[in-house]
Length: 238
Image (cartoon, rainbow, N blue to C red):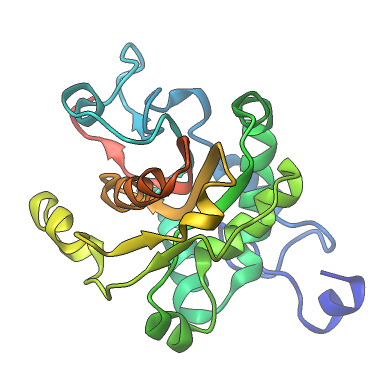
């Protein structure tokens, strides 16, 4: 935001959602203490927060094979400010709330991302009817912010959602898988230009959505798929 934008449309804090204090910052000084990244406390496969710090992998990743090589997640979705922020981004178009969380997550994981040597970021697509109603895709908004920091281009055309699915948050694990069957396809010509890509989403719960997207990309010719989600659930068994 420019200083003129902030003068007429003051920036709101992603944690408390009040006007940021002091002026000119992206988060309130008093809110910084509530701002915690998953960082090295995440599962080494999917990135979900591990409550047991002695573990390296969550229960799901220990018992099932995943198509995605590795995922990173920014914040614990169970923190009140995280799920409220994402709600206001998605349903009240408060996209500027993403600026600081994306910047901090991008900085935290930059070295890891550089080691992956990926070609581009691919936001998880919304169904066209849902994107038209919302006016934007929150995964694309996240990708644009982190992509600038990681110097990675964004491809919004290679992955296509061909089936309008029910919201995953309303479904159990088995139904999530069925809900996503044949939900995505990939443009083979575009996909074959990439060796390694990073899928981007706002929330990682069980990983069903990312896995479904990864399968479509791998089938179309991408060699390896990684993932990044701005937030994730916890490994409750940890």
